[in-house]
Length: 124
Image (cartoon, rainbow, N blue to C red; front, side, top):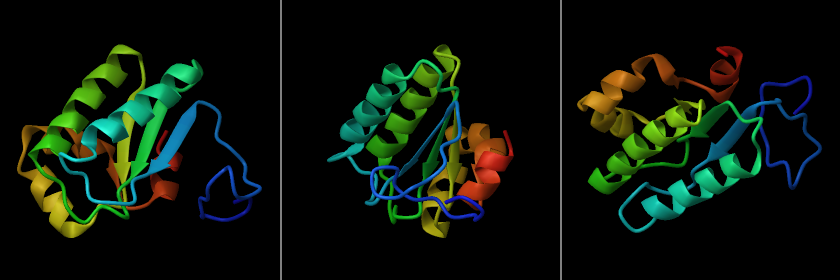
């Protein structure tokens, strides 16, 4: 939202967009039942806009992540890097962060995990 540190849905609010960035929020746990759907949605959005160079995912609504969700994030990160797109994560809850930090992916992402979307987008 212009003049604030708040981010809202572009389909529901009059917002400013950040050229080259795709910001998404996952509003449920990232589990085997939905991980592929999340990945497909992100890949579709990135493929539809060649100007995207950064994907930032808000995990504010994610209470759990299972092995399938984690594997999906790893594969997504690799695919995005091949396209020249950076992946960043923001607003990760403690239990989810505990799960990530104990993995090699969590260690790889350490410099790309932010407390807020505002911080993540300011760290370009």
